[in-house]
Image 1 (cartoon, helix red, strand yellow):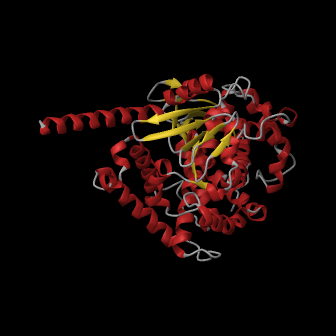
Image 2 (image 1 turned 90 degrees about the vertical axis):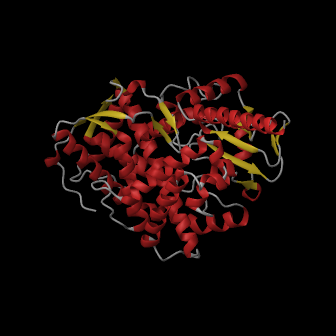
Image 3 (image 1 turned 45 degrees about the vertical axis):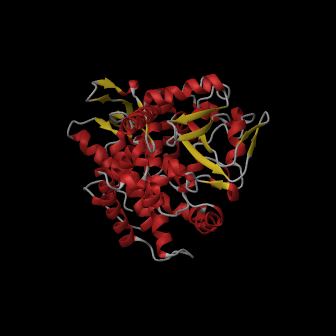
Length: 462
């Protein structure tokens, strides 16, 4: 009798795990995003959400409900372990994961690294890394390959750029294979895989699995690389803290920016008239110059291109959601409350696609961000970098790199929708893939047409 009872309990647990695993898989694909659209349409501002029997979340997707959570003091805000815990072996107690006074200390020490005076020096490096990527594209076109998968190229470019900016290190990763780059990609894939498998959420189980062993191996490569290349000037941080922040900067910086660049180029490829308008804006800016290089002062002189970038960040935000827990109750509109300790999932995607907030939210319409159209908009209607005290510390860095890369790309290439070789279909039917950042199933393929012969452009040194 006892044996049968144990069998029944085991089968019940396996059934729960199986259903939970399938539910997780459905969340991170195109259907998962369509499901969010349905939730937003049905509930307008928020709802409860259960992941199997283990996790209960409050999902929020309206500016009026999102704002109290994101603007809550950092002293009562905690990063939950459900979403962020799997990153801890990689990123340690970094700014992304720590809480309370420790977070305040680190934020204070790291903020000067993103001051405008520092960012100015990075623009040259953005140009250099973009030039390398464009040289690769010219080589491909010269050999007859005009159909290119964007994420492969752009991700290497943003990684190359970050290594130059953060460590003054010329990795040559855009041209040659890198053990570090491979390990970064593998860690990201393994984290997504772990999130989909409920049993893998427990460390004692995960580290015994093949995936857990692969994770440790890739982790050793990344940590060894950081130890070898870190800057010794930690400005008040210990060696361990410097390594944690360096890992976080590489993790959070290159993939998110690459996603934003790829989707911006994709949206402009889909809307040729907007692409031409951006290109003309860049050409006007370059008029009379000997060198085709974007300078710091140029970034504020690309208003329409910036509108297109912002609209792409709304429509295809690299990060789809952020989660928080709070050490006290948080009051919401209409006498609602998020209880102390509950996991709050702030849906960036849901907020950006909420028809109660945005007219025709699934359409690409850059003029939404014309200053004449933003006056009456809720402050938290557009939150691609989150908001409040725990917003993205690197958002100015990302926006600067976005403008440089997009401007130079449109100056040198005309983009149209490409064909996914596996599907034999054009990228207009792309299926979104929300992983650590928003990607596309089977890649994001665009067709390249060079506009400026390479021999007419000056070689641009770093």
